[in-house]
Image (cartoon, rainbow, N blue to C red; front, side):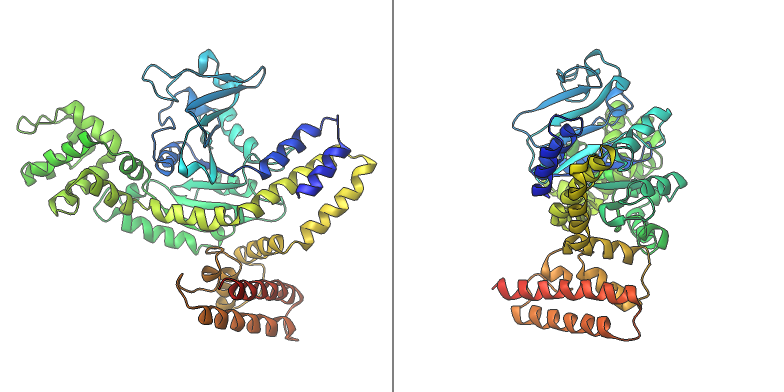
Length: 484
């Protein structure tokens, strides 16, 4: 794709397509771009803060939440606004000193194309995160910004290579958006989309077993054919709990300690409702209503209940221990692992795919004779590159377009990297599996799919799929031999 992009830039030198092609070439050298999208109040900014481990994204309904905002690794702390007209402008910190509590430097949200936040963070070295306005925002303009930024068929390539989509229940607008973000308008492509059952602690109405209830709901979504056709998997995450755990302060831990030291019956009565916790007078408790309201904003009622219970049991005796335990229970780590295995592990393929779409878009929008041969070469790459063939087949399996047994489908998804792209993940083994076992399993998978490809009763599309899997198994076998 780098070579084809160079050819395209030479063909369109000095023309209107050149800036887009140059941007596409630059994207190949950048971290993977992952957008966080969802309906309004789904917890997008809160989840982003948890993933980065810093309170970067504005979570209230201010001007900054109305603008598409990029978060990328940088050498310094900086926020840059890119107006729709005029040069970029660096924004000063707001009244509270935060990066995104400013007023956009006097500009209106509708006049700003995007904000770019530079922040030194290990979490942002492999992925640039893009926060988007809610899909069901109060104004059509805000919802359209998200769709325009991520729609690959609106006249140019998508801003993002992949999407993390937050949902609380499967809503019509969720399905519509997820169908928008796909490779081909006539065919669904779930490979670059990951679903998150957001605000998981609210699924069980804040009960002690709320996260277990959310996990069961996510399990049902994961095997729902509608959801499988739209995203790779669904992971339950309590975003507010994760964000607070990642940024837990010592004074907040001391406040939790005070609650745990108070009479248990009084604390249970106080924690019956959010309104009672924030406003009820408790003279014997050294926490003012204002302080409790601040805790409620940071933890949520479920988070406070869980934190107090952890202190009762002695599991979290220090602020660091409480932070680690809340992070574990929030579901953030499985989401991180899914991002790394499903997106970061396939980053080069997803970026190459974005570049291919950018070149195709330029050629079709600005057809010139010199570009027709380039279009032919792009079609050869698209159809011949095994990595793209794996992605297309994995998508086909997700939408149920192949007549395979359930066992075959599960085996094929795993081999194609549906659960992670490392050799041991594709073969369904443990990370420390002996080399001999890795090679044995790889040979067995190769034999299985060779037989399926050659079986006279196999349909044509099944034989084609089996051939892709044969090549995948051959690569895994070669890789297993070369790894030791």
